[in-house]
Length: 585
Image (cartoon, rainbow, N blue to C red; front, side, top):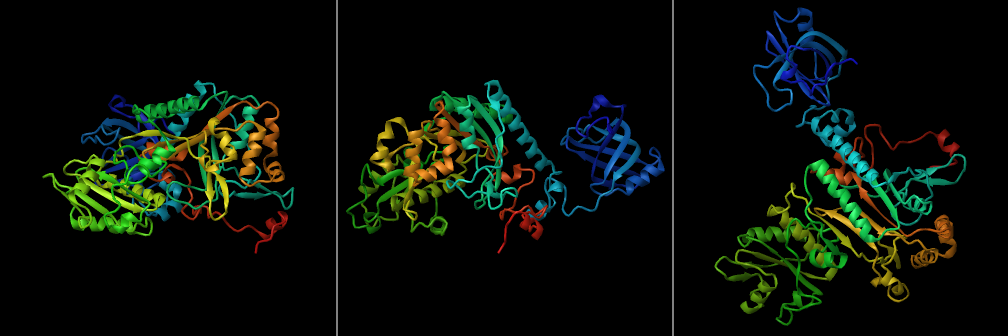
């Protein structure tokens, strides 16, 4: 070993010991007669001391020549620091250097290698290997390692087996776009990179591997955003001879275990909510339940407290729905106008916003007083269970659109009122999703999750009568408004799987060509099985308190799907294209 210790482990108990440290020069402070140097490795920072009269002249001169990010080796004696630094683990000691070696000089980095850097996203991605030297970025990858380690330990203890599945697979038409890979040995034919190991893990259940998991790389050719990358990682799991309840209990246990081991937190009770209730109460299938502000319908399926008063906006609306923002009656007219403009942005597209102030003196003031008497407004306030000081915010229009718009407003108000505490974690299960959704543009039904999801047993008869009413035996886990995992009980009988493919528009020949291998396997004794997959990158970002998964991936792509560090994707040579029997137009 070139070093005796790391830069993060020395303390007062090592005083007078001779040690050798290796690392990168963080900074040099030359005060004439004395030089202090901060030496960094992935474990921490240790201060080195060079002093005229006590350090050999050649060593002192070499120290003066060092630049940022030089790789050096330093030998010396551990001494107690006169001026201690409680911000670092080694802040009680320093090393009086007797020998110094430059292992490799370095060019001046294009940005500061500090927690607070002057480098923008583009330059840091181009020099990602330098960005990874920064303490806060390194900690993200260490956290990622922790999450993976504790995941494996938990599942190993429950007799799960980690099995690797193929990366070069068959392209299938459902889901997002595939990344395709040409086959040189089979001209004109292509592999696909897996969007998930879905069919392979089901085949493992048929093979008798009743508890499978894999921390696996997956690929989707889709538009990118903060929580998406073209290649991403899943905690992929499947179990045989289980019910939905078994899956929920097993993997709620996994998430609880991760919070305990990684964050040192006991996760509060994890409630369960149907998809229908989530949409009705929050306008989202991934509600943030750290705060209340549930939707109240003034005009909807259950009641109508708005019609017949001459206000056409409400009279013509399919749904009139709102939220009650606590202690917000103090909002000024200017603030209300700003909030209305925020809602009218193209990203949300609301036509307007109606409000009711419940003043602290008990009086009510609304933006529609011209149309509604005080008695009407009081009924609204009662429906919202509002109290003096609250602000009621109301949106109207087509039901689905109004709920989506109010969901955005609810989240925005939660943020503005400080109710979305990043240090608080609330998880829930969302259950009973629709099995199918209708695509108006395509004029056909699509699987809401994937074609292998089983309908709820009591809804199977509806497959011949009312497809829109069929519920899936499916479940999502949501944490702080972010979907972190989802799965389902699977179809395991060939005839039901054939029926499902038919509903999705496959001919028998197409279904056999695309998925015959799976349906054939079902004829050889497929057990009942169910599974789930968690977005590993998303989980890491939640544990790390960040919005973007990119911060927790060693070498991520940018928003255009490019790796600017290695300049990928890139053009390949004509010779390679010819070898693959491909022409590029």
